Image 1 (cartoon, rainbow, N blue to C red):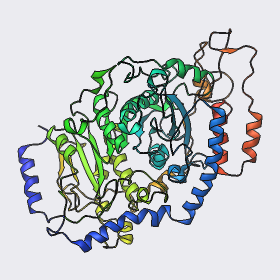
Image 2: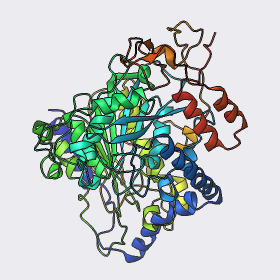
Image 3: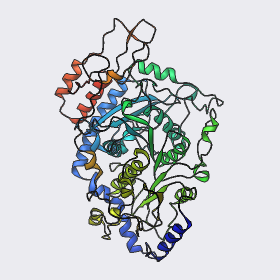
Length: 576
């Protein structure tokens, strides 16, 4: 057993003797102040003039980008309200110029889902850091929650030493709404769930692809084709050959395939809860509102007729964290005390299975703590606490550092920190002058094994437990500030193609018919073999470089740099 009965008995006595986390009688006045926290993000972030100015500029830039997308790739069909990335759909506009500002590397990618839909994504990383790093896939929420809402968290994980893939689930953002051929209706509507489950696996496939194993779509589920799966690889390969899709992860050389994590929000949280336990490549899971459990929690997993075994409910075996909140999807004030364990069903199942788990619940928080939606076409989407994303990023990174990155002696201390019980920034905007970010309605709990052995067990983090204490890090953690620091030099890459440059072409395949995408030139070859004809010139880069020099807006520069990279024009000279 992971912990002795004696340890469990002592822990139980500590809980019984601890002060209650909340008064027994419901307090309407306290609830009014607690509910006011749902407006903190607008007051302190998205409603500020600087943010609104950036949003306005991005709305203008997005119109230009939309016209270019439709002109350059008319085959794509992102038919949804967030396809243009404007207003709420613009997401966290503080990170559109993250690469241009010198903070890291963000590379757009395009690949084909198993249904034949075209998927839009972004790979995040840094130049500085080890040659091999863990990977993270982030699956978005539903009801039009595009990847842009999670870009801040993705950048933060990249700065912390991960390679991260964000993507628009089929039917959302700039990914296609419909599949292809007999699978045109597969995954439609996306809110039924199938693209979130299948999409998480497809995204993992792409994250782990490279020159030796280019991305190859899995067969479809064949929902509308009598259960017969369709291979949409020809579409993907054709688009790669046309320079419209990405052959493999452009940061593949930095991904350690033995260390992989997945995170998801809302319906994406349900998907990663399921896929994370089933997929042997995944080491740990974080579910943002909220972790699901086998059995009842997975009752609505969509069918996959062509591969029914892929929908068999998995056993709990991998560590997982759930992060939730007080007020949920449509914030409504409480009129009585809820069940304090209502958020903890999955945690209890994990604990009962002796698998490490943690559940943290944000006081005054809403369903939108992990996703940043600018205000205000649909005001409910903008509700969130001010410090919620800092809280989410802190615990997610600490969990992945412990179970995926490994070798981080500070991970336990960060998970067991009491900083969020005494957050002065929260106190400064809280109407009840309360610095404690843990919900007093819903219990936050943990049950995991410490790195040095022995149990860490707590039934109420708001009240505090024996293992909790200082983490040794500076106060007032700010995930935006942590992500927006200058990137540094990385390891010197090899010049494998002999052109005197360390550039993306060094990782390109050389066999005829295997190149394309990721800035890779297609090799010379005979007509019909899938390679570039000998008399066909390489893409011209001069005009784009001239446009880049003249561009005066960060978003415009970023867009041009993306084009240069796709055409193999953006090269860096090898460091000496």
